[in-house]
Image 1 (cartoon, rainbow, N blue to C red):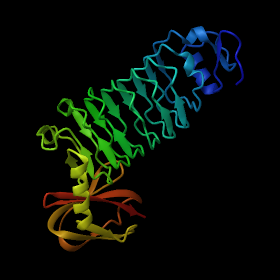
Image 2: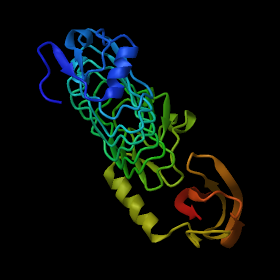
Image 3: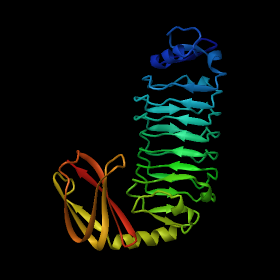
Image 4: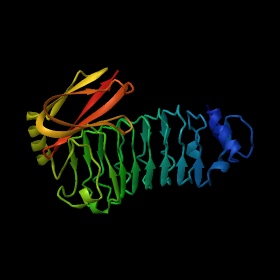
Amino acid sequence: PGSPPPGYTCIPDANFEQALIDFGYDTEGTLDGQILTADCSSRPTLTIINRGVTDFTGIEAFVSITVLDVSYNLGLASLNTSSNTLIESLDTEGCESLATLDLSNNTALTNINLFDNDLSSLDLSNNLLLDTVDLRFNQISSLDFSNHPLLTSVNVKNNSLTFLDMRNGTNASVTFFDADFNPSLECLFVDDASASYLTSLPWIIPFATTFVNNEGECNTLTVADAQISMFDIYPNPASNLINVASNIQSGQFDLYNIIGKRVLSQNVSEGNTVLDVSNFSAGIYIAKLHGENRSEAIKVIIR
């Protein structure tokens, strides 16, 4: 804190500075809250994994890094990379408290791995060179990839998405896509909703999600879905038994835990089907019903 002496950069987090000392980045080797700026400015990579860092102040001196990996620093709540404009690869995997991340200045980014962070929003509008994106297990509600023509791998599984736009003109070049376990995502905007590559790859989407070309198709779909719901579950929360009340003649009911593992599968018919969940661990589950060329998902809580 405060103004460092000329030629130095402040490193207020002792865990961050100790890691720099351990890895030979801080040539003075003294835990004194500062580092020679010259020790930082020419480094091509910075990898500080699982070192208990909660404040990366001082990272602004690492102006040459193209690779930044700060994975599994569990108490890290925010990360400022605005001065690190050359970063091409960013990894914050397992930083479960990371809720604030501004990537607007990181226009060179091609790869981001933000798996298991605590992000509720993420603006990627300036990161037009992105090729690989992993945003699994966050709380993001809206993502727009329409200006990202270089994307080949997209994993946005287990978020809170209600809007996802993939109309970038190069959907045929995507080699991996997974948006499963976003139960509130009704429409996925794509270049061509009838394209064969969506099913042959396949693009993995929630049962309740439909590929659409435009907002008009989504609005029509939303109105139709609102008129007739496929099924309901009660009680919810549940303890021992759940009732699956189906409005379709026949379908497949699946129950998935929070990490995406199917824990129960059952054919159901119109009316009520009683299922035993007494042996399942308490937590949040996703119930899915698929049948009659439709799908629907409901969040279920087991106590």
